[in-house]
Image (cartoon, rainbow, N blue to C red):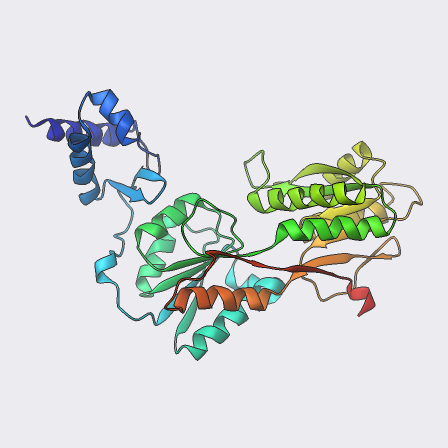
Length: 357
């Protein structure tokens, strides 16, 4: 038996028996060469056979992954139309909820729609909420989508599947500097610096950054990591002591976790919240008397909100960005004939308090 056929059959059997499960990454070519005591061309030939059969899929810069046997067929690059006409906008949250409640995504999608309309294209919102990756890919196929704009799409398995479709792709608000796809991001590092400088103006010498983890993870996401780096830089420049606390977003009682964090950092009366949910936890903690005290409290939250909010008689400051401009830049990056330079584009952030408007 030819050596590459033997390796092909061995890997295929191991995948079928469950040693490598769907979405698992296969060992590298070098590791397989060592395991099978075979040359590079021999191993690569076996992997090519598996990929042609649809057993595995390659993702640029990441490696080879096992495909689910029930996964729908993917579009290949050779079957794509020369002109893009139907653009999908992938959203993490239900479309109706986005329309009703999520202000900044509303504005972002409006900006995308403006550019697509001017280019003679049609936009199709697709939410991935409570859908399997296979269902999302089937929906993209059914709508005959020619290009995608992904908003806050952090599901690595879904992103791998989408990349395998070989569709033009742009990310909004996803920090992944390893990716080769164009990205449009709010400048969270700058936002962190601005937040600390604002709190320092109110004479806060200790500030606390409250941020949540993703579900089932024990670490902050990349967006919050950049924000924290900006906070640290701003704190050094202003002579302020910066602290951080993780708030699990997997519980409904965020307020109780916020109270625990504030009791641990009692010197802090200047707060930076990464989202509206943590801001609400802060508001409840102070207004329900869970944290007695009369010291002046100031809060900065990373969110877009048109309402006037006060906590303990002090206005809440919002670290915001132009979401409509972000949507326009993402759409231009997708439909433009020339790739954007640089590949990662940042939207500047500003501080506003709606109580003054």
